[in-house]
Length: 61
Image (cartoon, rainbow, N blue to C red; front, side):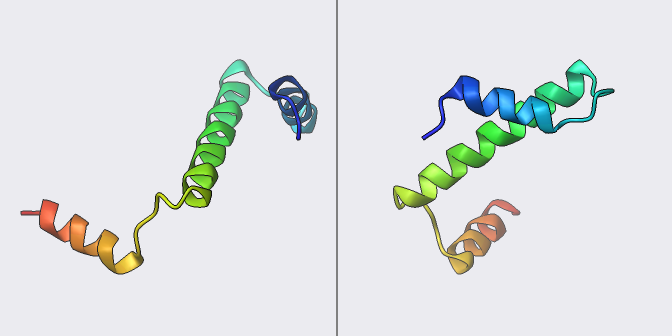
């Protein structure tokens, strides 16, 4: 498993040379959110598509 520093270095190396600070921070943000979501799914913290729709429609009122 990669360390956070290794993952950050790899991410930065994949960006174009003209990437801005905002570009870099956005990529870090997206990577962190994806990893958190994948971990939640692995841990079983998910709902079915039907349940998600039911919850969204219940909150639409």
